[in-house]
Image: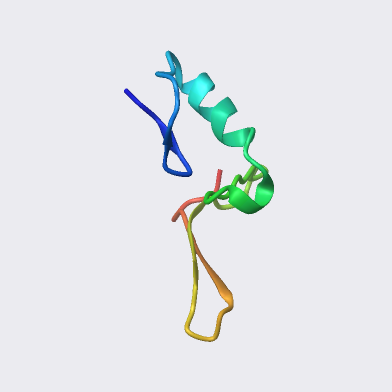
Amino acid sequence: MTVYINGVAQHNPDTPEEIRNMLLSLPDNERRFVITDPEVGEHKVIAVRRNPAGNLEYDYEGKPD
C-alpha cells in the first residue's frame, strides 16, 4: 500500500503504527484529522464538520466508553 501525504507518495508502511507516526509527524496546520481521547463515560467523536455559519459541529458515537 502506498500512502499519500499532501499529494506526495510516501514509502510503503509495514504497520498501522508506521502510518500513524507518518500522519502525526505532519505540522498541526497540515493535518486533516482530529485526534480524540475520550475518558470513561464520554462519547467518541466520529465526525467533525463546519456548518454554513462556519462553526464546528460534531457527531458522537451513540454509547459512551
